[in-house]
Amino acid sequence: MDIDQRLNSIRLPSAFFGPLVALSFNLWWFAAVYWRDQVALMLLGLWLVLCGLSPNRLRSLLLSLAFAAIGLSLELVLSLLGVYQFANQTLVPLWLIVLWLHFSFCLQHGFLFLCRLPLWQQSLAGAIAAAWSYFAAEALGAVELPFGYLSSLSLIAGAWALLLPLMLNISKYYWSHEP
Image (cartoon, rainbow, N blue to C red; front, side):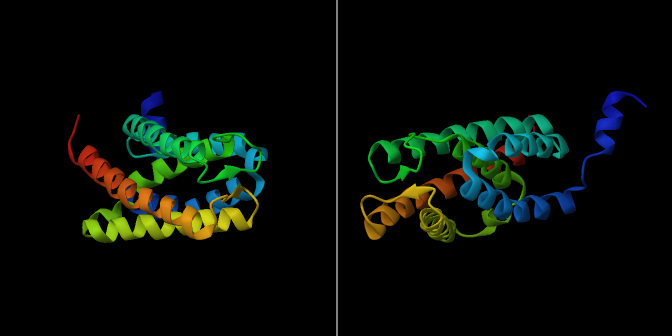
């Protein structure tokens, strides 16, 4: 048995992989937000393991990196505008970078079911989930919302109402077309 056959034999079947990734995101989010940079390297290692278990490693890795770059660009803009400030006063902390890598991976494998929803429902899901995430992150002390809850969370929700459907549909297109 050569190395490719061995590596292929440890991949999880697709039927289990997506739900496992989706469920793992909540644990991943909590660990990143609660312990922040203390667990960032461990979470980065776990992301690499997930990429290795992916049904298509290279495509998962490339799309994860592209989505993380898009998402982190949004984070940087919102941080520069003062919509939120992170506890350690960095524009984009390490734990958030690693969280984006995992979220980008989840979009492809755990959250693709959202592609079946109409565009307005994808937007609504993005707006609600993002606002709730930042509200909870603020309660855990990972982020401050200097504009106040209503203004900050409204801006975050608006950005995510656009971002989530865009990423979902790029992912759907990317995975439906063979290289």
